[in-house]
Length: 66
Image 1 (tube, rainbow, N blue to C red):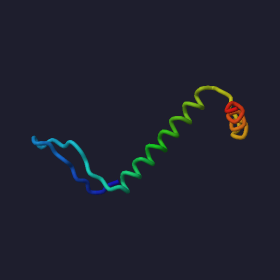
Image 2 (image 1 turned 90 degrees about the vertical axis):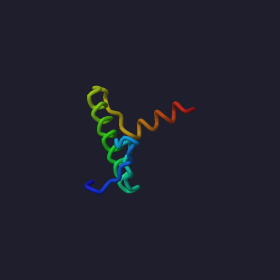
Image 3 (image 1 turned 180 degrees about the vertical axis):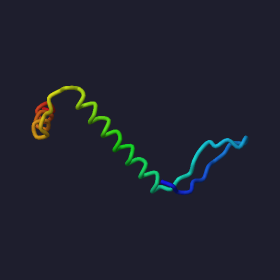
């Protein structure tokens, strides 16, 4: 990330916001989404539940929609 950043400051000179490029913002969001997926995977794995194949999970969802 080592890109130059601009800060917004209040009347006392305290930093209150940062300005980043859209590209950097999107990269940060993607990174957060990846971390969330990893966290969810670890939670699911630690739950001890038996995994369900994707095809079976989709079939269950379809049956419950009716």
